[in-house]
Length: 366
Image 1 (cartoon, rainbow, N blue to C red):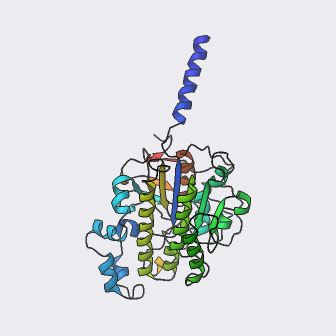
Image 2: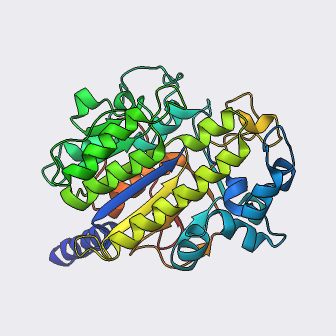
């Protein structure tokens, strides 16, 4: 009897230890680039779009800036950090031409349902409008914020004002700075004072959506001073420029967002609190159509706009570079982030399985 009991104890202990995989990650930086297509991520600028004067007024200027006949050079012109540092040190998923697939699970293929899926880990059919209002679903950041370990150590900076509802700021207690909200109470008063003033002094290009450069710098200053465990930066311009049919501005926005990522990662890797303890995850909420007309739109009536991508860079992501196999979904990110920092994310809804970035597959999958 004692031998049998000992056997069960050993089996149980082995199961517990295997489930408690130790990751080096202590902090997460999540970045979303609204509606940025996998096509430009992996292929760079589209030549047929660059030469379409309805989408690009000065084709010569942008061909010089973003075009090269060599695909590897072309995509590096557009996204030098991603195809330099990340390709060498991290992982890039979603190149469908090479057998790597990433999709949304929600049936709508636009922003609010997409962000709900990313942040909660499940697709809720009730969330069917960008004007849905306060989110009834409790996501991974809200769950974390209720814990002693993460309470008050999560910050969200977003260009789109809907994030106050997407993260249900009033119920969750999360710090959500969205659209034209000021940042106050930090030591870097002069810089924040300027940013607070700039955000309403600059042209309101997108009718109530803050420019991404302001969002980034506000979030970056907060990161440097307050040292949150979780930082979420939600950028918006790529989607708005695409809806406006402004392909050159869409490319420009993607290009300087890539530079935001470079600045962010360079700082992280030189700060003792974050160095070798932080994972950067970058993704999008939905894809877009493929042709010069369809590209402006997305949604369930626009073919293939459920196609997405994601990037991972950090101490638990071996340098795989461009991943060339597998099917992944946006509903897996919530559990993935929780798993990396050792947080037991539980919800009444079935959430997508965590992705084991060490192995590049679902945890537990063989």
